Amino acid sequence: MTTFLGRSNHTLDDKGRLILPKRILDQVAPADREFTLTAGPEGCLMLLDAAAWRVVASAAGVGVLGSKQQRAMRRIFLGHAEQVKPDRSNRISIAEGLRDYAGLSEKSEAVLVGTGESFEIWSKSRWDAALADAVSSYEFSDNDLVGSAAASQP
Image (tube, rainbow, N blue to C red; front, side, top):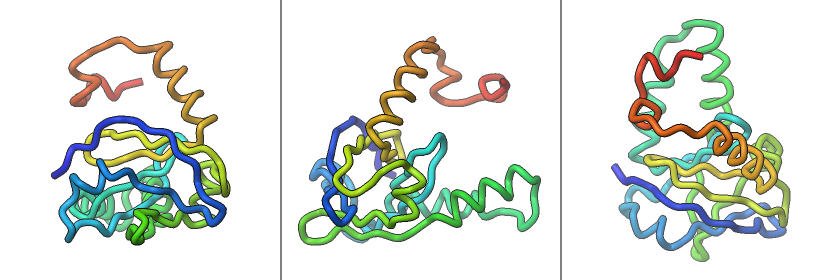
């Protein structure tokens, strides 16, 4: 699987489309260039290539019932998922419902952030707030990067 890194600022066009940087598309096999765009945590969108989506969707879709929290997560994450394919100008169209979820609108500023196996797409104002919050409580720990039961406790 591809590891996506970096951050870049963009502006949605008047039709709510976002240009994907060449550096992203160059990392993705042509067969995996049909991306999935969905609602992510904390009010951002997540963009996953086909290979990453297969892994995440199969894990997220396990168990029809599950807990109330799991069902809510599936409604948000899977229920908002849409397949998007870059056009000849490397633009993806962001549906109105997803733009509303993420606080984006036509011609608004967006921030694209590589988070490993996916990208997050943030409205500039939400990104600035999330980054300020993260920086104010930033304390490096291996567990925070790779995860652990202890790190996930409140």
